Amino acid sequence: MSHNDWEEILRSAHAEPIDPAHYTAVRARVMADIERSRAPWRRLAWISGVGTMAAAILFAVGLRRPEVPRPAPVVIAIPPAPPAPVVRPRPMEIAHAQPAPRPHREPLTIKFQTSDPNIIIYWIAD
Amino acid sequence: MSIPADPLAGRTALEAARAGDLAAFDTVMRQYERLVLVTALRLVGNMPDAQDISQDVFLKLYRNLNKVEAASLSSWLYRVTVNACHDKRRRYRPEAPVEFAEQLPSDAADPQETMTQAERRRILELSLRVLPEKERAALVLRDLEGLSTEEVAHILGSSEVTVRSQISKARVKVRDFVERYFRRRT
Image (cartoon, rainbow over all chains, first blue to last red; front, side, top):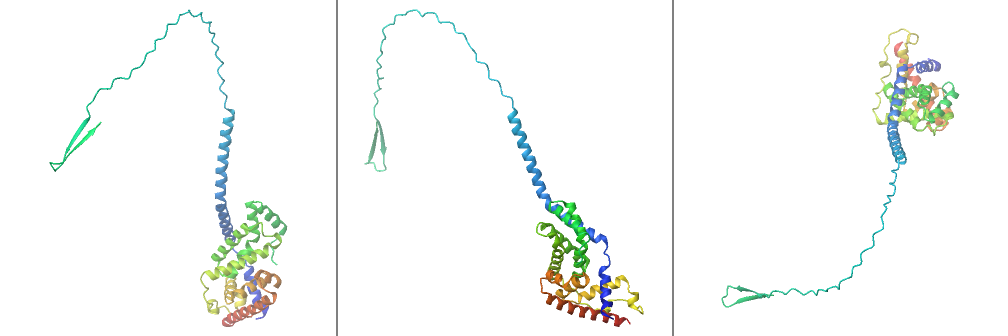
């Protein structure tokens, strides 16, 4: 067998087409993996987008809220008071406050008896 | 170098993908899916692992869209694919040892003529399996993908001398394997 013979066998086997299903399976797996890796970012983007929209709407609503008109100032016409009658002031009586007399109390005496009959304790509370 | 058809369209799609266009990224994948999947298949030897690796490579491309230049996209994809295959082989199960021709069923008088596509595939798979990791990568890129030695050296991060040596050794081993296979059958 010459060099070309065995080399030709190997090359022809190598060049043999592969079932397209094998390629399709690889592509599908790669794309699925990429989609999975992209999903968290998409979710984050979606959530942040919704949050931003909500904030913008609230801000817009806050800006557009109609102002409550201030009540018009109420003007009350007060008629001029009639001239006060002249009253002669009476001389004021000054009352001198007297401190209330304190009732006289006897001092409180407490007698303690001990186990020793010869010893008695008196406690006088004022 | 087996650059996918219409590189200009690929460049446009790449630019659109950089701007966040997922449909454009899908177009980029379609243009380079053969390069990535078939290279991975030759290096790891089975379709489920090759598909896992292709998925990782394209996700890595997606994350690095702004860093990869359109002109060097093929090289970048080859390099990332080869590295991903090396990582996969180191982390997971070692391949079953090759029992050479015993694994290849055929009773035909002239196997080369009657060889089916399935048999060719099997020969390719088993002959690559006899090679060490680096020799396999060099042979796949140089002889099967048709890259130049310089490109292979750039992708593998080796010198051209090293790559030439690896390819030479790999060719001897593969030829030996295929010849033994046919000797047993005749």
